[in-house]
Structure formats: structure tokens, C-alpha cells
Length: 330
Ligand SMILES: *[C@@H]1O[C@H](CO)[C@@H](O)[C@H](O)[C@H]1NC(C)=O
Ligand SMILES: *[C@@H]1O[C@H](CO)[C@@H](O)[C@H](O)[C@H]1NC(C)=O
Image (cartoon, rainbow, N blue to C red; front, side, top):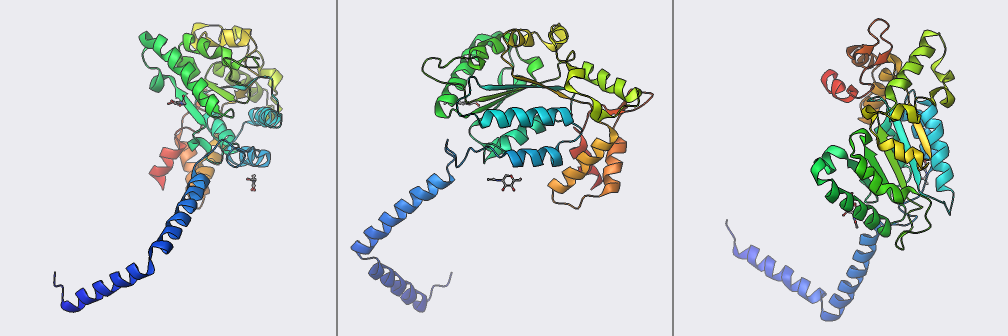
């Protein structure tokens, strides 16, 4: 490096000007203002448990359900009503407990994401939204006792931090029944447990339980030449009943939750048809910021496998693999 005399003079004079400008008094004021500003900015960006960060947008949820979730007229209606009712109640008697049921790729995860995004400014990234997956958080059956106390501690700790916390339990079918038992007290009608009120929290359970029965009902409607939109909740009630859940396959966890009426809403997700997969692909392209292309969407939908073998009505994996297929075609 070739540092000349002229550079040196320049440096020294710049330093001089700086030192002159920041006499002790100015510097103090400056640092003071800076710190205050810093604190404000920090508070502004740091997510807090208040209405600035947590506020339900019913219009937003309604719009999202129309634009982003396809083929689920029953689930959309139930969830919008349930969440709107709960969020507009200043004094709920118990936490909101939703149990989402349906086959793979039908939109259960998407639904929980849309709920979170329309309550928390930070959506799924919010520090008040907690997702638990059996395989990730509670993988070893022999450690069940540790998991139980850990989970209780987490729920209590997080709700103590912020009453309006949300807990999503993915793949409930794989969850150890003992774990579910350990959270039951928090879902119940208690004013307070150990001084903590759980009544403003939201619990969402995702599972495949009842999924096959839901498919059978949807298939019956299709075979009778009836519109999918004609299917009503009452047509699926047996699919979501104790008799169906009460077998080993779908896990025993449901029995005790249903027995005690801790679940407020059972939300069925219908199997998706070709046209829904096309819509998923179009929405996915839009979300990625590329121009939605009908022929690409058709290509993606054609690539998927449909069942039953003869009629090929419903996508085996719903919209689950649409995203990776799109990467392949675009
Ligand atoms: C609620 O959602 C709607 C539709 O997405 C949006 O236009 C509106 O700005 C949102 N309101 C608030 C307060 O965020
Ligand atoms: C909140 O839950 C998370 C798990 O999602 C856990 O890691 C954390 O320790 C909990 N916080 C408190 C204060 O218990």
C-alpha cells in the first residue's frame, strides 16, 4: 500500500474535525439520544405479547381461506366461525381446541399456518406459536416421563409469558397417549391452574384419524353424481366419532379427549381432486412470484397418482408434492 504524505494530512485533518465536532457535551447528548432511539427501535422490532403483535384479522382469514385453501368448504366454514368466535370473546371459559382430521396433503398444516398468520403479525415465526411433532420432539417411547414433564413445563412457561399462545401438535396419531394425558388439564374448564390461566390459548391437533372414513363418504357422493359442496358436516359425523377413533390404528389418544369434551371442534378435510391440485399449483407459482401457468399446473396435476384405481378421483398425496414437482417443471 502506498500511503503518501497527502493521505496522511487528510486523515489527520478529518480526525481533527471529528474530535472538534464531538465535544464532551454534544457527545453526551448524542449518546443519550442514540440510546433512547435504540431502545425504541428494539421495542418496535422485538415481538411482544400485546395488540400490536397479536390481533385477529377475520377479513384476512376469510380471504386466505378463499384464495389459498382449496376444496375444503366444511373445514373453512368451521374454522372461520370457531376462531372468530373465540377471538372476539374477551373472557373465554376454556382454551380453543381444534382437531383437524384428514388424509395427507389435504391442507391441515396450511390451515394452521393461515390461522397463525391472521392472529400473529409474525405468523408461524412468532415466538408465541409452538409446533410439536412426535418424531422431532418426543421420539423415544422409553423417555415418556421426561417428555411429559418437559411438555407441561413448556406449555405452562409459554402461557405464563403470553396468555395468547398457540400450540400445534402435528401427527397426533404418532403421539404417545401418555403425553396427551399430560396436557389434558390445560384444555379443560379451569379458571386457573397453579395461578396460571390457560383460557386464552389455542391448541390445534392434526391427525389422519378418520381420514379413510372421510374419503369413503366423499367417494359415495361422487359415485351418486352429487356435488362435493353438498357434503355437510353431519354426513361426516360418524367419520369423526368415537367408534372410528377408538381403534389402535388411529391411536387411543382421542378417546380421553372426546370423553371429556375437551375438543371444541372436529374439522374434517376432504380428499382433493384433480382440479384442486391444479389450483394448488397455480397458487404455489403465484406465491413464488412467478406468473401462474395453466399448462404447467396441468402437467403437475397429471403427474400425480389418483385413487381408486378404476375411477381415479382423488389425489393420493393431495397437494403435498406439488411444490417439488413445480421445481422440476419450471
Ligand atoms: C386484514 O386482512 C385484509 C385482507 O388480507 C387486509 O387487507 C387488511 O389490511 C388486514 N388488516 C389488518 C389490520 O392487518
Ligand atoms: C416454550 O416452548 C418452547 C418449545 O416450543 C420451549 O423450548 C421453551 O423453553 C418454552 N418456554 C418457556 C418459557 O417455557
